[in-house]
Image (cartoon, rainbow, N blue to C red; front, side, top):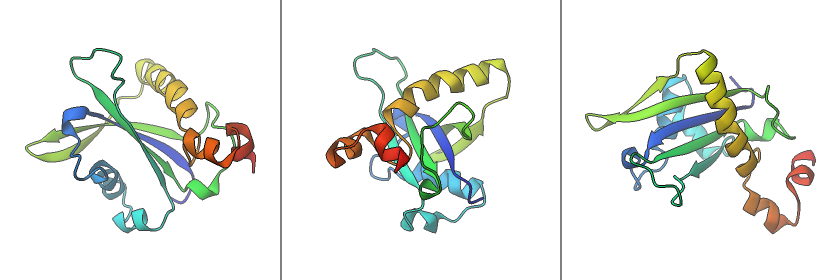
Length: 143
């Protein structure tokens, strides 16, 4: 349970409660036998990737990226780094989490999704954090 892993929660923009951005994160933690108090410990780093406004979308999706146990890993995220992707939907006012069926489509989808997210969100920090510290992705992640 204390191993580093990247979790990607994919949800419709309309399903995110902007007054409670951590609702999907708490859902993930609870569904996986983890305590929501972990959010107060700084163990995990959370990113929210909004839909791209430059791409017209009928049903825009956003991604909540959770770097579990962020301080237990440093380095570049390779294709074998543990990652899980879940769909999150609001049903009757409550968020519900669904897994994807494993198969070729899912593995291809995760690969494409990670090619974007892993570049935009280095492990445990944002590119803005790296710029402010004067480092590069490689420098910051190797230290």
